[in-house]
Length: 139
Image (cartoon, rainbow, N blue to C red):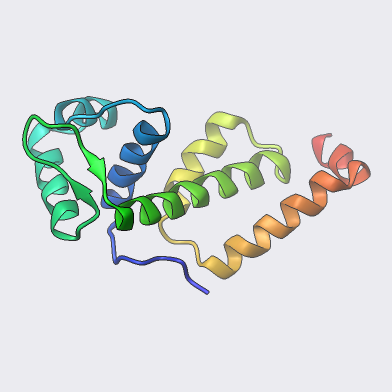
């Protein structure tokens, strides 16, 4: 069953994930800081933040700290979890470096179905719980 609650573009998912990471780290985040963090123009960030406000995922006014709404928190958590499930799969099952795993997880998280993600999670757990298979994959 698909967990996605909003129809967000991959770009908006990247924004909401970055906002969520700041939230997890208890770090106040403003639009200008988000622009620097994502290496995107301030104008593009303002446009994206306006879209997230209209979808009721964040609360934001220029020069204020960006905060997630309850709806936004739920959506951001889903995107964040997808990223980490994919990264864990790439590192654990495919023995991919953390850097490459993270880069690819960021690209794939926007298009992967929940069904495939669930199966990847199950396989990763089985491999982590089976030392013999895990040792073979590390070679």
